[in-house]
Length: 610
Image (cartoon, rainbow, N blue to C red; front, side, top):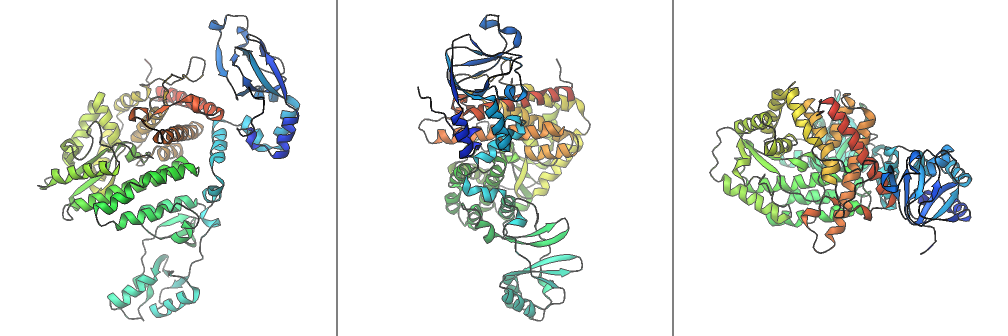
């Protein structure tokens, strides 16, 4: 057994080289026999204990004389875990720490621990912080050096350009001369209280294709439907916005004051994987084969985002945008142009919430105008599902996909289904309703979907009996915690979807439906519920961090399994807790306690006792 101290693990990797030197020069090693009390409740501990070998139980103060099988054990500590920090900083322990077997520990004396906590605020925060604070430390620690500047960059502090602004009445000829002088390829023109954008391409189109005179007012050819971002917005979010709207420039505003223009080329200089280039390739695809080449490469983008430590919410938003662009493009390639205004492709479930990262099962449907005649409908939609499967989007085992006629419905049929599912919301009906509530439109005529959604909001208004019944599903799966608060760790792994993700997603889904929140993404739903005071702020923020942690840990192990032979779909939601480092195990345990607290909130809110 090695006795070398591992300084690469949190929180010790937060110390400077000089501070690490102080730590290593003051470490002691201690040996404890099985059953020996290492730290006694009510007494000041010797210091921070870091396990080298053995196992230690944190127990209730009254249990020291009881047989081990009758003791109330809060948690067990094993190799590289630490304990006693909080007790050392407080001055006395409130629990007993007992060696379950022969144990060897490094001990950092309390005096040295307190010196390091005082000299290094980040190191100190690791011990003092709430769950949300420790999660943030984990997130910051996972961001690679290459990505740190990008992920923290704000629009206004990075590559925003000062705009060339002209007044209404400036002719195209003069505007073009000013653009050449300033070496820019676009300008803003102010007409009254509005701003419009004109590019060099717009000017050439006006002169050569439309036959306008060079004396034409530049304000007459400007586009006034501008996409804008906030001055303090993250640069990454601006990239997602450009990708989603297929544009190369956005206007930057601080409140209502115009601050500048953000160019795609400048943003790409910050971001090495060129996700927007993938978006442009999707837009320019002329054939199914062109589209397949891009779609099959999206997992490489996922790998890159994960390696670079991009936060899970950002990664999901970007990947969801790419997946939707692929589906919309394929739909437009296959469905005749004269049919497209009369149909709407919707995605549901995790796709509808924009919370998938790796490609998940197809969960989609088509809504049609009442009375539409489309003889080739079945063959076209079967081809759509078949080609998506070829692109790497697996068929839905339950048949929730457009190749199944049950999910190709007129507006009237769709609303009838929603009413039926809500009136008999159990079993398959509850599952269908849950995925439908998370739907949003990705191609065709979105007005069809919005009409159905708005009708359903009105239908469910103030129906407390329905919401209480619907919310109960969030309690269907037990939280994988022991009676004394430790993680229940089964040999084959912990199902994080049932134990952590689903209770949060479904509970928030219920609240969002009740309060007519239009957003489908769980993180954004939580933000809106906090803003409308339908969810306590602290609980809401903890839910954001807990859900982000569950998804991130699941993704990391999914990517690891993808590299090995024989990984099966049934493993997708299984977390092997032993593979997690101590920080992630601690955070996982705390996040599961957040889930438990949220279930109690739902139980009280919807009177689900009994």
